[in-house]
Structure formats: structure tokens, C-alpha cells
Amino acid sequence: MRIPNVFRMRLLVIALLALLALFLSFSIINGGSKTITISSAVKEYYVSNTIQFKASIADTTTQDISWSA
Image (cartoon, rainbow, N blue to C red; front, side, top):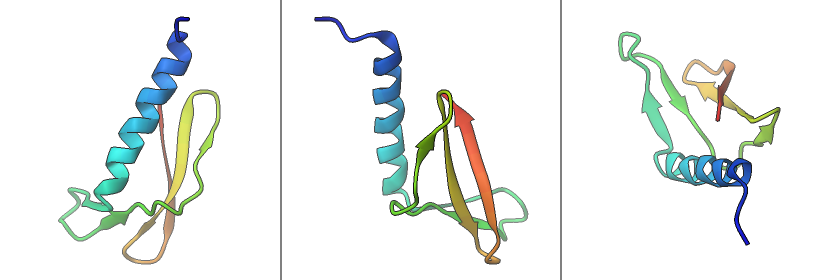
């Protein structure tokens, strides 16, 4: 039984997200002053092949980050 390409792509994106969750924080090249922290407890949801999650920036504002698979 073959796995459809859509599910394969979803599994790949989920695996990449799991790897990304290992690196809990990374810094944006914006003078090196802002750091985005991704928490594994953050709710993840799908909107037409797009994974969106909320990330909190160091100055306690929240920003939506999304990308398409």
C-alpha cells in the first residue's frame, strides 16, 4: 500500500517541526536583539497545508509565524 504524496509531505513537515522544536530558540538577524522562542506546548494547527504557530518575542509581544508546505 503506497502512501499518498500529500501525507508524505505532511509527515516530512511534522518531522521537520519536531527537529525545530529541539532548538527551542533562535535569533533573528535584527541587530541580534530579538529572539524568537518556540515552545513545544504551543498549539499547532493546519490551514490548507500551512502550519501556523504563535511565537513570543523577547519583548513579550506575540507574532504569528506561518509557512507553506
